[in-house]
Length: 301
Length: 285
Ligand SMILES: [Fe+2]
Image (cartoon, rainbow over all chains, first blue to last red):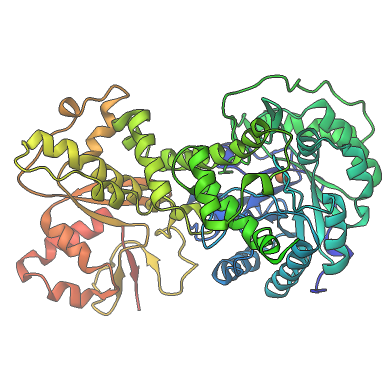
């Protein structure tokens, strides 16, 4: 296990937003952003020496950033991509993020990358496999990894361990930390029929360093993680429950489709600030709307 | 559970099965057939569901999402081509490309890399085409080459970041000329030789009809420089000698060696032009 970071190395960052191309101009032309930190998608900046990197270099002199990846392919039985990891480490060394995260998922098999976050069968075999991979990645990056619970639309017959128990074991065995996506818990609880509060209550609270908030879209019998809407009331309620259980939860909003103007995002983020400070839960959007083919995990650009 | 069952439900097998379902050709039924032939397992052994409808609804989120997500990415990179072909035809090519050449890279920056090549490969070979027919067939691949170069112009290292690399000082060749200084095109620059001035389609608006909007030129190649300055994309139409000159600068070359490769009488004109366009990295030693 990589022990280079102590508990203090995961400071409370406050309230942040996922950095997206659409907001570059706005950010460079305003001095008051209304956010405490940004999360970047690591892959968008590996090999990027254009305007995006220029904007990021400006932003990170003002507020802290964290790096969030989508291509680590942690749960895959393919070998780890060492070239990717080398470049990820190089980027982390350059940017000095507060932490580096990715997902409890796999993205493809036999070299194919679906660019989706695919669910694992959750059992002893996959747990052992994932633990080994987390340890290898931590060794290679020389950092403690932060791992996010994904959204999912199917469960495998091979699964024998609930996701919260899987994540708890992962934390126990590797020392990794958790990024809890509150919307993903809500989405999965609807899609797989479990109580989201049981899930939240069973997580190792001391390992949670960050949370994601996002809006989902209903489609047929499923709830799809579209990152395209304001946050639902059920998600705000879960968020309040999580905030009450944690001491230093760095909170951020992901919005990747139908992205609003930056001030609208900040207004949504301010609802999280208010809830964390003890205010009532705001009226969230109803998730009864459906769309024909909503895309889960839209590409964050 | 017997040995065969243990193998077909192993982690590797589950992943092989779902990857096949998501990325193989055809409707869901043919995808499932393909997955079964590769991974030796049926959907009933893999997915928890009460009914076939439920299985399909759950799998469809991944199957449909895979295509839509990546077609969106290609549309993002090839907006002009999308406009030229229209949504339906563009999506047909994009989906076929994704099925034939699924992404094997960790980055989406590579996704569209082979698209122009793919369009060229799938071009039907027809004897005795008229100029207009030939234009219709070959233009999509040329638009794709042009748009890929534009995407790279915005992504790769330009002339803005002096401090990143020790030897790179962007800007103008100083007088008196130092023949020992090095010169090179930045990675963000692409030099293109095209059959048609595809960039003129940019101004054609959404109802473009190519015969109206393109200034057709069939007899000689058109040379184009695509790059960026201060993070803004630039296109410069080149004369043949300018194209050849910049081609020599794609690998680092000493100013003295570059000048020695052109006629004495053209040197002044060449230097004036290089200073005027100001798109190269120059390292004074
Ligand atoms: Fe998330």
